[in-house]
Amino acid sequence: MEEAPVAREEKGPVSVLTMQYRPYNLLGPTLLGAIADEIAAAHDAGSRAIILRSGLRHFSAGADVAQFSGRIEQGGHSQSAIGEQYVLLLPRNGTSRPLKNGDVIPLADTRVPPNINTILAQVVTGLKAVPKDNLKTVIDESYTAVGGLGPELSRIVNGSIDLSIEARKNLDPLLALIDQSKPVLDSQSNTSDAIQTWAANLATVTSELKTHDQDVAGLLDKGGPAFGEAQQLIQRLQPTLPIVLANLVSVGQVALTYQANIEQLLVLLPQVTAEAGGTFVANQNTKQDYRGEYLSFNLNLNLPPPCTTGFLPAQQERVPSFEDYPQRPPGDLYCRTPQDSAFNVRGAKNTPCVTRPGKRAPTVKMCESDEQYVPLNDGYNWKGDPNATWTGQDIPQLPPGSPPAAAPGPAPPPIAVAPYDPTTGKYVGPDGKVYTQSDLAHPAPEEKTWHTMLIPPGS
Image 1 (cartoon, one colour):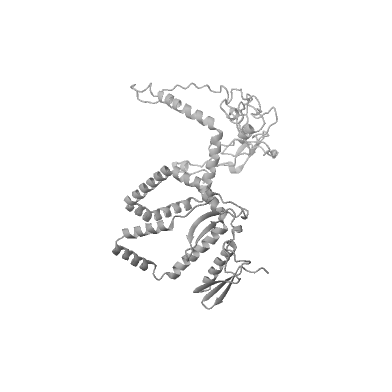
Image 2: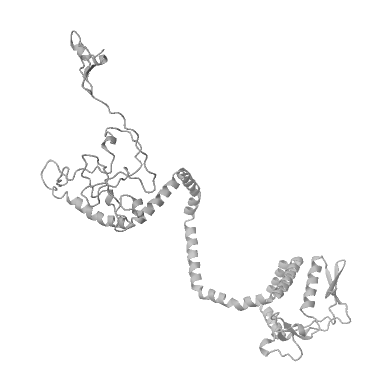
């Protein structure tokens, strides 16, 4: 089993660290890292003192130059406790080959620290610039600030050591970050004007908020009830709002399809409005009892005759006085004469197909399909059967893909109507014979007075 570079032994509040990194306890990244780890472990264990000793014949033979490949040499970096000058080799990356005998460190990779005498002289000069009374105040205040904070300062130092160890482990990414930080810093410098503008705008917004503080406070106070009312409105509209929105989607699709027609309508609407207004100009200043539009209607009766082809036959027509609303027949009812005939020129049969230029059809489905409009007849046999077709099509016209219409049931028996004599109850039947029905007769009273004229017959 490989021996650990540093062994730690706890003796009460004292931790003894024994270096046993063979063969000579050479100071390199391995031994230094192990010492740092054991010092941190001793601190965590509650040690109040640490003794560093060697378990070999020599305490340490110095730095292991072979482990510092590609390092920067710093001549005369500092002095030891007994005044010895030493050269510190700092790591630059962890991928270079180890140093060997005869390697030369370029001058560009070296730097000499400032002279310690110069630094001390500058410190003395700075201290002389501070009056003694103020200097005493600084020292006293420093003691007040950090006095009794030994454990906290110790944690800061230990944290700095841990940070250095982790930085050493991630040396290459840190160096890459430092080398590649220039574009980011340059971008901040190049956009300094924009940043200043943003900061100025932010200051303007904050100042306006400060000026209108009462308004903002009122908005916050009254905003809750307003949002509550809005929520209640949405809840009330929840049953119908989805339907309205879905219908708007359908309306939008139709409007998109008929965009050209809508544009033409909007173009023609002002001109039509102007022409309609012009019909009032002729009677504007005339003296007459009735004022209105100046129009002249020329009516041609039955030229051409009314179009009944394609509608229900006369036997199925409803009396106009009925006020009920029965189910519509399954299909389309419209004038189904040729498109170039004189019947219903503006009817459904001549509706232009928007998506099929040049095609005219009565329904959208016929416009979208390959089916062509086929008339029933020429429309001039309106005195007979108006739906006497040439092609045998259904009446009403069913949409494409619909099942064929069911055959009509047997016709009801005809109803015979005959006049009768209210005095005797006699009437002539369809066979030409005379019949008598007694409950139809109302014999005249023997005496007619004005009272009997007001009483219904049979009373």
